Amino acid sequence: LTLLGEMRRALQRQELRLFVQPKLHLLDGTLVGAEALVRWQHPERGLVPPLEFIPFAEETGFIHELSLWVIDEAARLLARWGPIGLLPRLSVNLSVHDLMKADLVTQLAARLQHHGASPQALCLEITESAIMNDPQRALQTLQALKALGCKLSIDDFGTGYSSYATLRNLPVDELKIDMSFVRAMEKVPKDAMIVRSIIEVAHNLNLSVVAEGVENEAIWQQLATLGCDEAQGWHIGRPMPVESFEAWARERA
Ligand code: G
Ligand code: G
Ligand code: NA
Ligand code: MN
Image (cartoon, rainbow, N blue to C red; front, side, top):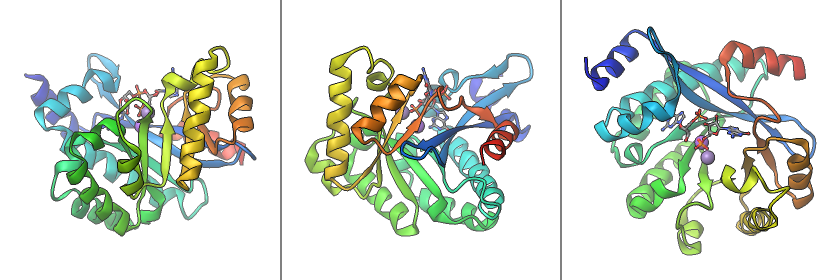
């Protein structure tokens, strides 16, 4: 069986799993959201990380089916977590392929509605490079997602080539500072300066800003001092299976 065949079978056999990583508000430590990250529970190979199949899924176009599965799962979880106040918002990653698919927004809306999840509770993370691949097409999709009520976030911000002109025209709510700048910012002054600049740009554009890759208390404190809004990283919590995340969130509440 080819990898593509195996991935198709994985969907049918329900071998894909969503892991969930929490995001906290930096001022008061409240749970403001979480990111859904896919894994493949392979019958022989064990838990396969996304870097071993997402790039291939993107090359073959299988990513679209995979993304719709992720969106469906996310909608199901949001419908479960919203009413009990466990989690206000869940973020899912979209790929460049998804942005080019004409029916993405219709499909996404149908899945939210099917589960009774609110579009406002779903945030879509799109990398800077995916947007810059075809800014015009991306803008159309982002506008449609925005019109539906979803939140939009630019992922891996700082690693691409988006201009202020592009940024100004995108209907996004949030910038996510790439981990590569955050992970060593307490030791590398240049990284700290870049993080500070991104926070400033975000706030000047009225966007909320999230730091990913927060691995220790020193970084957490430094980000708080710089006025960063939200944080995600191992210091707060690793990506966890859904049941572990529910237990983690209940314990904190
Ligand atoms: O979960 P992990 O930390 O190993 O993720 C590695 C990479 O895989 C990240 O870049 C992440 O954005 C990507 N990734 C994880 N889950 C998904 C998904 O559901 N869809 C897409 N497109 N990328 C994902
Ligand atoms: O590309 P994206 O930003 O979606 O990827 C998120 C990735 O970052 C996932 O692979 C996730 O497991 C990883 N990650 C999340 N928090 C941390 C962290 O604090 N340190 C490191 N090294 N990786 C992290
Ligand atoms: Na992401
Ligand atoms: Mn990222």
